[in-house]
Amino acid sequence: MKILKFLSLLIFSGALFGSCSSKDKVEDEQIRIIPLPNYYQSQPGVFEMDKNTVIGVDLSDTNMVSLANYLNEKFMRTTGFGLSIKSASEGIVFTLVEENDLGEEGYRMSVTPDGTQIYANTYHGIFNGIQSFLQLLPLDSTGDIAKINCIDISDKPRFAWRGLMLDVSRHFFTKQEVKRFIDLMAEYKYNVFHWHLSDDQGWRVEIKSLPRLTDVGAWRAPRVGNWWEREPQSVTDSLTYGGFYTQDDIREVVEYARERFITVVPEIDVPGHSMALLTAYPEISCTGGPFHVNVGNTFYTKEENSLCVGKEKTFAILDMIFDELVDLFPSSYIHIGGDECYKGFWAKCPDCRARMSSKQLQNVEELQSYFVKRVASHIQSKGKHVIGWDEILEGGLAKDAIVMSWRGMKGGVEAARQGHRVIMTPFEHCYLDLYQGDPAVEPNTYSMLRLRDCYKFSIVPDSIDASFVLGGQGNLWAESIPHYRQVEYMTWPRAMAISETLWNETDSRNWDFFIQRVESQFRYLDRLNVNYARSIYDPIISPSINDGELRIELTTEISGLDIFYTFDNTNPDCYSNLYTTALSVPKNATMLKVVTYRGKCPIGKQINLTIEELKERAKKKE
Ligand code: ACM
Ligand code: ZN
Image (cartoon, rainbow, N blue to C red; front, side, top):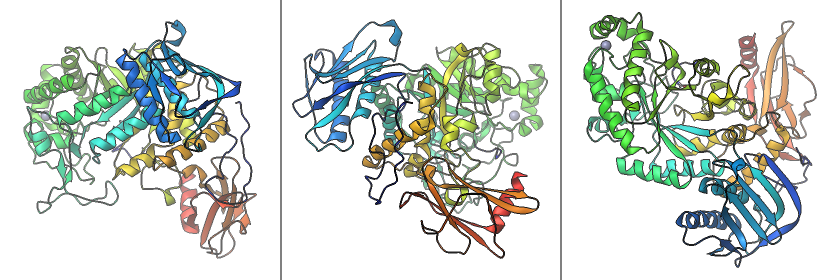
């Protein structure tokens, strides 16, 4: 989402609490695992651990020892004490087995009073079991003992591709921040990190044979304020905002991800979204420029940001870029973008027109298809699979290209119909850059995508052969994400919902049970100082016009909250009007203020809206 602006099982503890301390959350938790395992059964008894408890692995197996170290580090962070790693068959024991049912990533876990056994066919399966085990740990342990309830789990993912995408072009995030992102992804059993490394606003990967890409393309004038409304760069600006990853940085991140069983898939977004590339190498544009790295000002259709498809040098430069990338990234997938390419300059360019005539291309869509096919076949010749956004369908799909469907599911459906593999990432369920609560209290962005909308993601439409669906992913575009804390805010908890929809087999999901587990995860994320969003606690204000009168409905995304409101300009509390039924506006009122409570505790953000704004919103809906 960039230029286009359209753009159970357990009892839910909904008790009302008497005070507002942080302990006033769900106390009665049995299981907080996200994504929910496909099979689990509580068993009698508890498994008690203290500093003498052992992680039992075969010490000659370095992969197992790494897994044990990983478990120990995270265990210590949650419980406050560490365990010893020994060659033993007691304590917490990892065992490789051969069980067809578990597949590549599945695991079986048995927690008994005598110990915990994790079985899997692969190290990745053991790693997934470790994540579930860690999520069984109590968050309130005393520091020298931790107890977990006994349980049997048998689990494996529904989809092989469970991804998150991070755009590091619109705003730059450091190598350490990217690692932090990947580390938390792994805890929720994601296995693909899609790294959006280039766009109009910055080129972020060192390409040794083309140094101008990062010398020039990685830097722009600093700006704040609403994206698309910023003042364009001027010659007097110092280009102090930006950054890039050296090839050593990339290798370090790839290795860090590999240790967490996450594949890093790089994206170089071409032929559109290429203003940073054109700033460095204007000779591969249609017009010759001049260009500058975009700062978040509008430009689409007015300024050129697409590579010229008529010039041979365009392909020579792209070959140099992708040749270095295929060596740098061990992933068997390379993403070449292909989205939102403005083709107006192609239609006027003599070189592009000559290409169209020599290749007998009927229109600019076929010219884009020529471009994608040519770039894809070069990358495929290096033994890699090519992925593109669903626009690569237009003008004809490249052989064997994988389609990432973002403008809804229809691109994915069509690609699968043509026998291509697809990754589903429809904006209406998967775009983490969108609003997750009322725009009055959220940072400026495009349309709405509440946690509940993510949780409704059902990724295989009836009309499709499921075997073509590799999986799905959440996408975080970074136009309005100026720093890493905001990355966390936009990602969590919505990425928990997406993870569960990609992992768990059932489409009949239990929302209240999910929220119970999300709230337990909040307690965990609090310990890590992760800036997750608490927007699920905010009131939802829905105005409409009824017989010419403004009518206002108030709801909440989760159950168990009370809504209080005022029309008299005072700040509401739990002694204000309790919402029970749709509101009409009292004469001369200018403002509605709304707040939510759980018991006696205010819990969501207070939302203040003028009556004028409410009328505007109601009219827009009509
Ligand atoms: C996209 O959101 N333009 C893929
Ligand atoms: Zn051209």
